[in-house]
Amino acid sequence: MDMNEKWQRCIGFHGHACKGLLSGFMAALYASRLLGLGFSEDEEVVCISECDACSVDAIQVMLGCTMGKGNLLFHMTGKTAFSFYRRDNGESIRLVLTGSIPDLEGMDMNEYCRINDPASLFTAKATVIPLPERARIFDSYICEGCGEKTGAAWIHIQDGRRLCPDCAVKYDRFRV
Image (tube, rainbow, N blue to C red):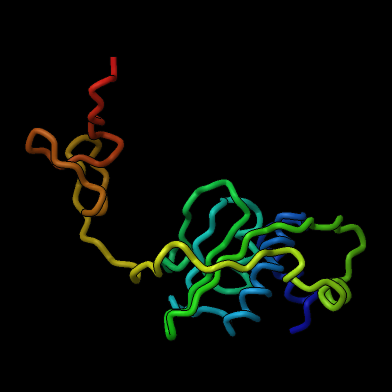
């Protein structure tokens, strides 16, 4: 599949072409080149994104990192930065956007990618977050406040009752 086809798949998933989508597209290309990544059918590739912006949609399409599979995680710093990991060999890289993304008007992605190296857009650094464990499947309990099923890891026990995060009273000694 050529770059135009890959780009069109990203646009189709995201809904429109924008600079944010292009930054994620280029980050996925660069991470693929640096770590030898392919599309992740399960959790072979893990991405920790530091933003919840358009760029993440391109990473989902290009590398198969998704919330549902548990190989797309968020560590919100507000930065256009992504840490990529390979589970099979433990290699990882953190890419931080430092270059500027061009306007997309009339852009041919085959030509753009031939002329523009993703390395000119991102600074590659060592990852600072260790490779997360594989996603777990948790038992669920019925919240005794709202009656909704909630994963065991999120249940709070208060006054002998199992409560979801929405129903549990937050402990705050300064709350008035």
